[in-house]
Length: 189
Image 1 (cartoon, one colour):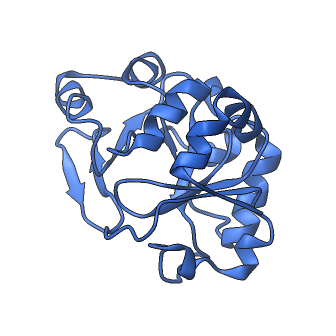
Image 2 (image 1 turned 90 degrees about the vertical axis):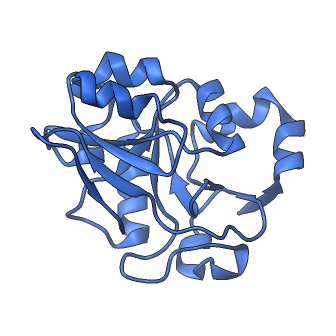
């Protein structure tokens, strides 16, 4: 596991972006630390499921852009209102239009997908990667979520390639916004 500060990460430039495409990594968001990988890499996604001990719940993704959301999800007027609120501390739940845009083991074959664009500098890096990445809390399911490097579980750290460290993040998990139903529903976690 290699720990990088924001400054170190940014100094590596395009080289580190290429490494992330083939890695499992922990990164900061506007809410808590997330763990992720390329959302098309079934093998890495399977490893994250194993690390988190989360086998029967879908993962969300950080979209590389709002345009990616519009191209791959079913969007109506109420959904567009919420897309305009991004970046922000929300996970928007959409009906998926293009099931080939993510690996099947991201959402476990469901017709919906959770999508984030956090209000954090790392979202710009996801845009540079140009592909969606898995976003889920960097903890074993059921345990406390990670808000600093001190919270990182050794069972996870032993299998992570990179940690992009940003100190303490004083947040809580994102609010779920269900846009795949007739009426918009919000669920705080």
